[in-house]
Length: 421
Image (cartoon, rainbow, N blue to C red; front, top):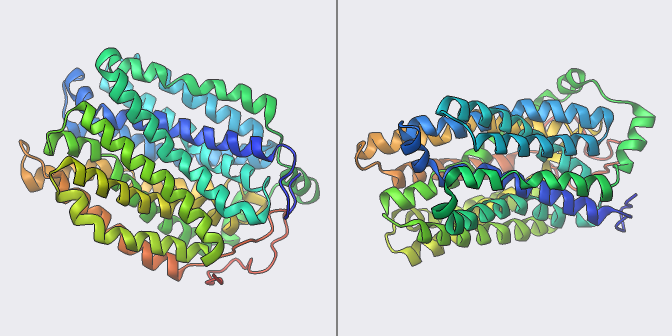
């Protein structure tokens, strides 16, 4: 068991497993964004129709967060985490054999259920297993799993897509199932969960939500802005690079690799920084610094400039996100720590799930079906959400370094009260 000062036995294995779970989850998710145009051709449809696969994945995630979060709060973090990883791997493999767009979209919805369960369960397990002083760094590490998965998808796309096609890429996407073996053999159950379970039992979900409804409402709005911020700068960016800037597979892959390296660095930097300046200030600073980059990121034509500004943009986007895992877990009521962060995160995802489709519609409306203006759509969404995040972060609550052992501790009031930091 971890104390407030030291790493406990198995803590490192927990962080490794949770990082890998989110990385491989994101890897499977982002394979779709690289092959959208190929799916249009193979399924004889439009880009707007294909982006529904992204929409249903995001929309299904709150259901997964609820199901796997309740399993984790009642029966333990390990079984919930293993079940989630196994299910999303199976759905990824099944999607490789989808005979039609309708079946493909259905399988991506089921994948979304599994994907929705992994983040909240993994984050709660990690933060209940590491010392307080390491939370900011661990938050950055966990969230760095997301761009790391995007990075892997970009590498696979650049190296393998011309040879194995999108179906072969989805077969490779089933590899995360092997992570279950590592979790089963190396990852211990959360000692904090065991202690709290013995002393308090499992808090009723609806009673807990009613007690903390102002916090729930705020967190959902915050995570809606966060999800528009990330998906609005990521999901259609490869399509923008290919369709509007005319870059080939190799260039798109290289740029994606570069900006995901930036995302990883940003998550680590701002996650660590949040332990010094506070969670809210770190989020607001990262979102604010994204705004000056916007015109260069979206309207440049040279590959070098685009790659450089994309690196900076994702450094800021995932820098803000690097604070999210620890911030939501610290805000969470103790008896529903595996459920609350995942559910509010994924409800924000649900509201933002139409992002790719909306951006595609805006691009076509702005530039016409023959020449969609993705640059305008990307700028519109990123600019609005970055500004919103600055305000939401600074006006919201904070419970930095709160105890994870089950006591509510200082600053744990159910209402919305801005914390220190």
